[in-house]
Amino acid sequence: MSWACWRMARLIDRRAAGLSEAERLLLEQHVATCSACREQSTLLNHLAELSDRAALDVHPAASSDRLIARALARADRRRLFPESSTVVRARPRFAQLAAACAVLLVLGVVCGSALSRFARTRGTSVAPVASGAGSRQNVATVLAGSVFLGERELTRGSRLPEQSELALAEASEIAVAHAHVRSDAPAQVSWDGAHALLELRRGAVDVSVDPAPKRPFFVKTARFRVEVMGTEFHVDLTHVRVSRGRVRVLAPDGALLSELSAGQEYALPDTGASAASAPLPDVPSAPTLVSEPDCKERLSAARHALATGNLAAARRELSSALGQHPSTAQLAEIHMLFGDAARLAGDSAQASSEYLGVFQRFPRLPVAEAALFSAARAEQRAGRVAHARELFESYLAHYPSGQFRSQAQDSLAAGQGSR
Amino acid sequence: MESVALECPLPGSTASLDACRRGDRQALDAFFRAEIPALQRLIARLIGPSGDLDELLELTLIAAMDAFPRYRGEASPQRWLTRIAVNIVYQEFRRPERRRRVALELVPSDALIDQGPLPDRTFEGRSRVRRLYQLLDKIPPKKRIPFVLHVFEGRPIDEVAAIVGASVVATKSRIFWARRGLLARARRDPSLRELFDQEAP
Image (tube, rainbow over all chains, first blue to last red; front, side, top):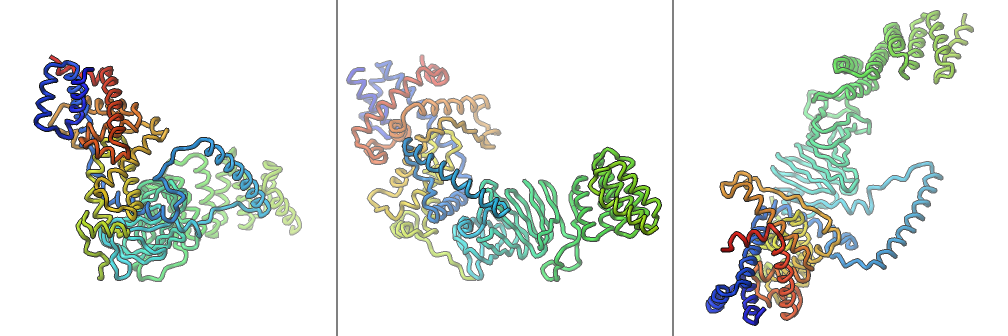
């Protein structure tokens, strides 16, 4: 490379920054006569165009609002947890890194064994606690729209107190802990950061929970509570509709009302009064599954209805389950539950018939054992002692070491004594 | 209802910068909103078509928020922010796992119904851009960044030197070596070589 080419290379580099008229002429003259510089110039020109394309082909910032709000929220978290800073990534020094890993490993082993010993001595498992330090992670921030704290309108990026009563206007969005809450219509919520609990007082919200932190998140209404790990769903005062993932809907006392997966909806039965004003029952009656639930969910609903004494609802669910192509085991369970419903209704003869039917149709299934014993008990309850005795003897013959063996023997002994 | 929103000074004004130093969220919001498009182009030019753009942009904003109380106003806010972004990108380049990652390219919907070049041309252009950045990935970041800032971005040498925190002479030398390495690889690369061949008489 000649001295002239060397100088021209500098000018070629500076082309994007701008050349004076004299420099431009000089470059053009040189390039016209030097093939090497011409090739370089052309190639660099094309590469610069490709680079321009990379810079200009960028999609408009997906949402500057969201990006800024996220950065503000992350900056807040970093202030709370300065040690978890991810911005400055120092060059790893491997010796230090290895030493730190070794120390952590030893600490992990020691703590693990101590914890497992503790758990054994207490006879309980060690569960994570979602309060205290954990609650500090449950930062809440306004992302978009109009959000009011009492009478005060909060600006975008404002942090919310750990306990706050909020009014969300249309198209508002807040980030609470690891969830985003969006309201398409005015809604009223309260946020409890210590328990990652969002209580919906009025209106409806769409909730999207990030599964990554593996921490639970709760949405509560006056009549039920939704427990989620990571999912997306819509909730109003009487409905939950799941778009992604799974949620559990619990009664205020913690009883499981329903488990929903994507595309399913849970609706509380209509009590004839508005949820905001009506006094609310402690335990709502059986849930009505609005979307087409499968046989398993019908069975679950039927069991719940039986447990709450709602026999009509249980029979309805069981009849619907029969029409949904149940598997053999499900069919057996459906008839067992029909038997249970009859027993609870006081119709022991009908119950006995259902149980015996299960035993005769599905003798190889595990449920057959319970079916035969239940049939014997139903006969006993119906006062048909001889038939009951036959069935107890049959049970002991079929299942000499069955789980109801001692009860069957006791019943036979009692029958002999009374005779 | 009482509004907490305050009248916000113009982004980049002394009052706005003072408010940013105090951590005023509204001022920070306005300042970043004005600077995000330029920052986005800069980072995209430095890293190429990669899925990390938003993440790096976010990290830049966080680092700027942290550093604002220490901003003395000696450089323009844009240059100061550029320097932060370049540092973030530099750290990103030095992460070993970066080399093992493959980004999925997002194709904007309007590109699919574009009336401009035919789809094969668009695809060809995109693959050339990717190829260019694959070649740039082989150049050490210390040399690559000044080269991209000067030759592709068109920033004067002294500004590039200030951004990367090196002397002008060292910066010129880094640009020289980066240029030499890139051109040598580009000449050997069939898809990039084609660009030159198309124009050759």
